[in-house]
Image 1 (cartoon, one colour):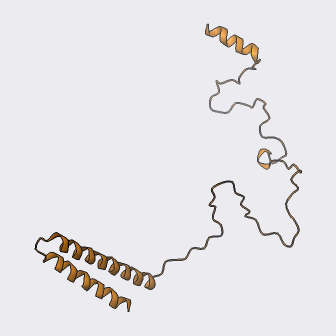
Image 2 (image 1 turned 90 degrees about the vertical axis):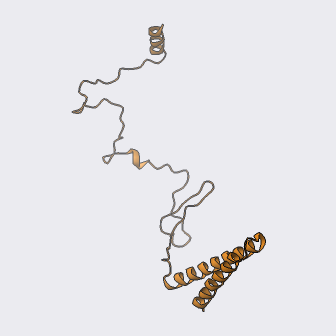
Image 3 (image 1 turned 60 degrees about the horizontal axis):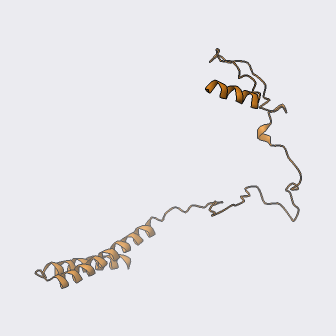
Length: 143
């Protein structure tokens, strides 16, 4: 049925375009026939597209999560808790930040001088800053 409709709309487009071309320069009927012809052409295209999608359906994508928000949001990606028991920690309990800890329990940034690597051997560590005294010395040098 859709194939017959598409062929009929294509024939209608051809007839209306032919009539518009034979109006011998009269603007109003030419415009009307072309407007109707282009509407028939658009309907014909939509019918063929519908047939193509019925024959070759688009793949269906299933998403587990869509992060669409206009403000703050909380995303829980873990498994759903079983029952009514709460599995989260209490809000007043402080847990250490695992990203700042080394594997052996020491802090990554100990603020101590390390050994020089192979590159830039001539560089030395920065001297100690004495706060306001150091600032006064720097401003005296600029004068």
